[in-house]
Length: 363
Image 1 (tube, rainbow, N blue to C red):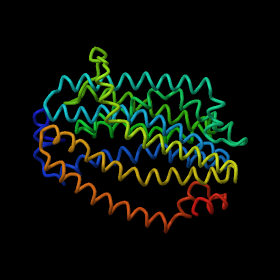
Image 2: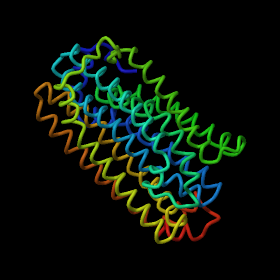
Image 3: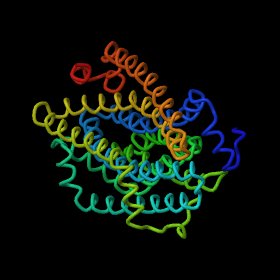
Image 4: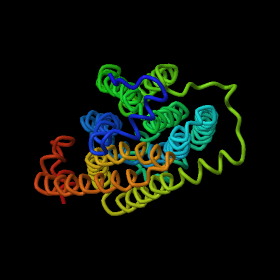
């Protein structure tokens, strides 16, 4: 447990601790959170892979939908969190509390709207995502539950990011980790015992996300965390401008990844059907898992940047960036080499009984 228990102690920690120690300490829970978030998708792909190739393809088709939901969560979470860390660096806690509540409640409402609209137009949505005739039923079963849980998924991502920018990423890690454990336990029960197929995988994901949501909301009232309050919900054009200015880079990164996946799904549907789409689904989840650790390390750098920038300590900001870049580059090269060498074995973990999927995925 950190010795910095008061807001002023946290300020001292963020502005005085040696950069390598500070970034590494903050990065551990964010790396774990990112890896666990990827495990949600990995677990679904693994268990659904036992159903068949069409079911595996369906989970891959739904991946762009998950990416859009994550894009909204990251937009509000990083958009508000970046500003919150600067305000805390300037010791303006009350204004930081306003921003936190505006982002959380706005994201929850937008997630609810997206869930309703997606459910109403589920059939054209599934076709747009690139489902084949044989995987469309599986995809609709999966997407339906994901859309129901959309507001909880979006707002949980907002809170996780806000904890991270406050320098309290451990709270986000606990919430995400608890949900992941529940997801892995419920997946085989809903898929095989209750015979719900892909719908069971999605339901397990949503229930686990709801648990994470509840734990994260509760965490806002612990320690030095900024508490949520509807009375602090004071939206304004200026606050939304700040959120979008800080959060749109994350949105476009996620949105473009979603668009690229949709185009690949459509191309795979036209040139190879479920086999190609299933192979791409597996590869997408694996590469997402590999990259999430590096992204998590970068997220450990972000609150250091925000606090010290807000405090006017620009030399520490530059030092933190150079430290992060060196470590991330080495890690990315190592993961690339391992992925290239063991691609067939990794793909086979998900569809061992389909050599064509293994061949296409490894290639």
